Image: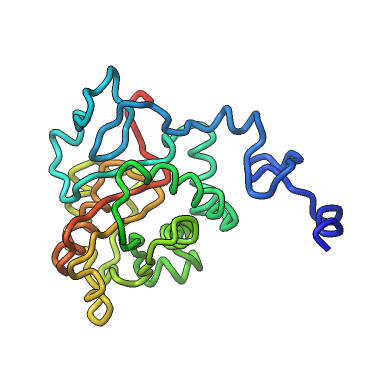
Length: 240
């Protein structure tokens, strides 16, 4: 049966549709154009690559995280938000490429390893219900579910809610983003109790300023989370 399916539906690169030997992967050319975060020295708050080398056990912080309070403990990113990574994120977010969540789950699992703690609870950044209806899916929830499947960690898809709709933030500045997200995410009134006493991993597609992740982390802490960690598919980095 599998051989017949391979003939009818041969494996393709998830980015350019070039033939592949395995499902849900990137061809060599697309892999080379996809900026995975592979540096040894990273910002411990957001996962952005840093120059130089860290001493054993030393945790470094990028300039942006030094100047902006992060309510979470540690954070990581799988990709840098440029080139083919940006195209993949936008395809997942706006163009119904929900199949991209499967390979992204593997990439996220690898990025998580340095900050993973036992029995983390995976929680996606929520969408307002009007955006969920318009888009038909929450890309952060798809990523979080794929990550849970890869890692075996517990997944709480609706522990956080977004009761207030925020304006589009793609072209907003840092201060506008933080002001718009203030109090926009809250624990679910009936299911937020799952966060109490847990180490919580907040998952989203992109981190730009960190305003959305901060709102989600603060909501998780308000619900009693012990520590909050963040993981994004792509991190927007200046001059990256």
